[in-house]
Length: 438
Image (cartoon, rainbow, N blue to C red):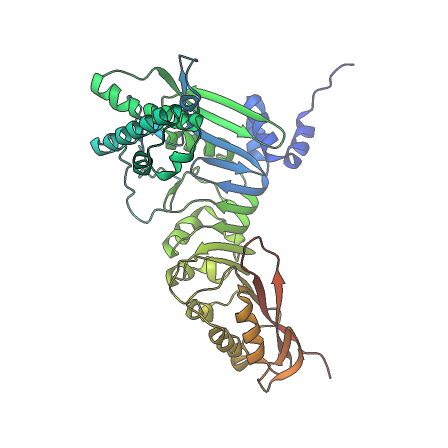
């Protein structure tokens, strides 16, 4: 049966409805279609940026430096160390970080300051590796002879004393591999492997590996990958959910590319980071439908309009944060807010006073709903205190409704949450509703 090629107009109608990853593959494999694909609108459901790659609708594009050994008969521990690395390496095999502070056109600078290059080639580093290797070799010899030496085991992290012979041998192989760059530098020799940049593409259906000569650094390769997927598009890229899985780093992004997004999930950022990130977000995205932040209670993170105007704000509180949240909460006006943990600095009285302020000023519009994960003692004490207020119009064991004004009421209630943690957690919710006509 003859194969009928897809005509230009048909392809133009089909491409916008294809999965973005399929479009990328077609564009790369058939250059004649590339210009057409770039002209058509691109829609993505989930887009995730990390330090080592990009994830589009569950398909991961991960970059790393791959070292191919010429000698295939090497220990398993050494083979594992040959897996793609997330950092660059120099001529002797040391890990290096070139370009860690290089901002290219189009990049989004999310650094807090100048980043320090890692130092893996110092004499102190070599000395520590040698010490650990010698101790493990002695433990290994003792294990073979079924003789245990407690002193040596304690010197090299107690956990190795009860490890199997094969695990100790693998760790010895890894340490010897880590010492190889020091040997090559002293002897002015090159490692016995060839380097390449590896792109690993993984999805639920398949995996694909592509390698190119190691003639550029990883940050440059990341820039090329980002430009290949998203660059030179004539229309704004529509993305439902964007996740930035790092902070204090540079987001490699193509020049003159804009995203129209609905929700954003980020790590701890400050106002300047939001200002920088907003350069690649189209104005039609604001206010965001949802913003998820993993952070501590620092006011600077909540000063930018991206945070203030988000319709739904989810805050994953840093458990080690020692600052109270109530002062920040009082200044937030988000329609929906969700606190994923309870601050150690605040008691049930703090939340009683805060929720009571909604009754007293009556400025929160109908439909405003805030929730937070609290301890059982906290949620129950909040309800006990609120039930004593004169505005109460309805009450049950875990619920109270209080009158705000003639047209609205405040509902407060709590529910148990199913979690895998040892400690039980409860969800406390307070929301403004329209009062029922009497």
